[in-house]
Length: 231
Image (cartoon, rainbow, N blue to C red; front, side):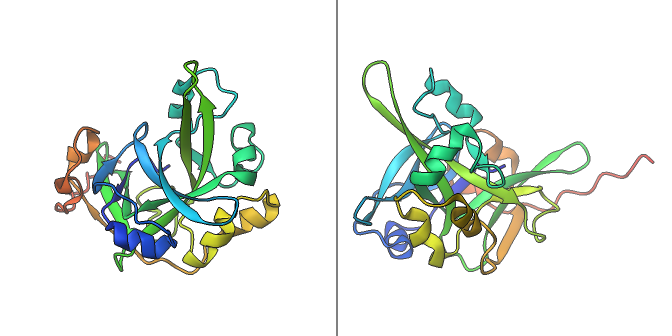
């Protein structure tokens, strides 16, 4: 799964990378967590792209409570076209969640060591996402999103079996097209494209607490010693 990520690219870098007509305004984030607002790129009916803040954790329109969003921070790319909670958004409400990297926790002999994983070239990443709108009892509308995941690349599979779907830039336009699309064509966009070289390093356990959101969260620390086997 993808449960934490960073977004430290400048607004100007994001505007160039994602073809935004206006530069988004936001503060750098070093430990983005579920339930928080995240930056998402969407396209309107005319194809113009814009950035908006959406709650991370999908709340479908038919939900009885916004609390269900905690269950749907991720959507598996292998089943997103058929699962009732995701299939309508998959057809017509797609977005891209920009990130500078993401965290995963690896089992190191009874200790879960956090790692930060990011692009070797430092360019912004575009995570494939879906968005929904839900009307609160007060009448206000909550817009929320989820990040799609897939099996991890060989380079990071030793850390975790899943990773976010990272879209190739030449697939952004097709993914953001708001028109209902054929599920097979959309699923093809989620297959690994041109290789994005990823690098990773261990970080301290400060990232484990959501209230910590500063550059120390993804500072490199020494690789922990492996625990000897008892067998």
